[in-house]
Length: 162
Image (tube, rainbow, N blue to C red):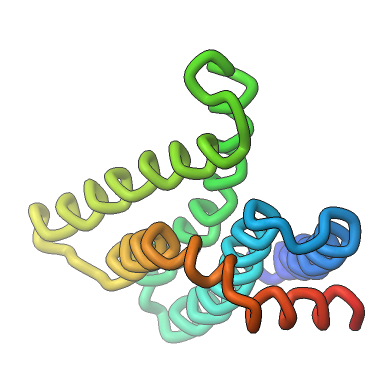
């Protein structure tokens, strides 16, 4: 079942990169579009890295690490799910995608912190949840600067036109 799911993962990743191209071509380089490009591009790359490491861990029979890495591949798309849930579920509190993005990050950071604390508490700490926490903190603190940078906008447009 694990290897069969790789076909689905490849389809998800390839279609995700194509959606990024379409988004930039259609929406341009507005700050919010670039924030989503930054988060989604890095999320797709991280998904691939975690999936590859999960396969390696399974081959090495490190099932606890494999399970945590696979869990992280499922957590990465939650950012987009939470955005839409907040935007369409509570529009009086979350009026636009910019607020929805922040709300999803403010949800995922404590969730990942809780997983890290839980791992330590039960004496079974592995690095994937801490890496996800670091990723979401990095995205939160760098998204405005990176998405607003001309070099990043240029790179996004070059990618979209590739």
